Length: 140
Image 1 (cartoon, rainbow, N blue to C red):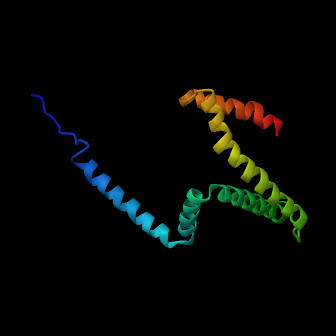
Image 2 (image 1 turned 180 degrees about the vertical axis):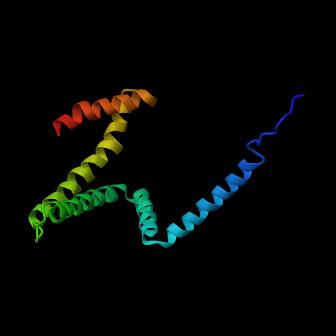
Image 3 (image 1 turned 90 degrees about the horizontal axis):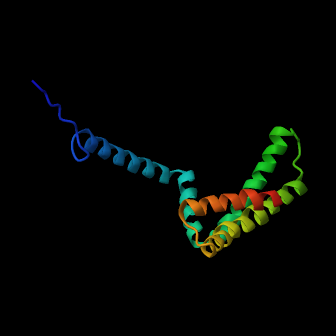
């Protein structure tokens, strides 16, 4: 005699319970994150990224390279005083290269090249990786 065991489907059983619990958990996490400084900064960054993407790119490049240089000087090189000239140069490099140039390269120039080459999907990705790693990065 054959015994059939009913398995839950996507619309019944544990999947419904798990899906509901997961949604509730994600909503609670989003509410908690919104109350923290990190959540507020993240929301501000996302809003500014839509309104002023170039400003966010350049500010991010400036901040990342400035903070990383200060960390290297303090933690790795064990300096007592920060070399302000070097840190300023790194910050300006981050603003110009990592912020401004990279923003235009990846949001304006590459899309134009891919559109002119009439590439899309995985071929476009392969072409962009080849161009980025084979042409652009060796010249930098």
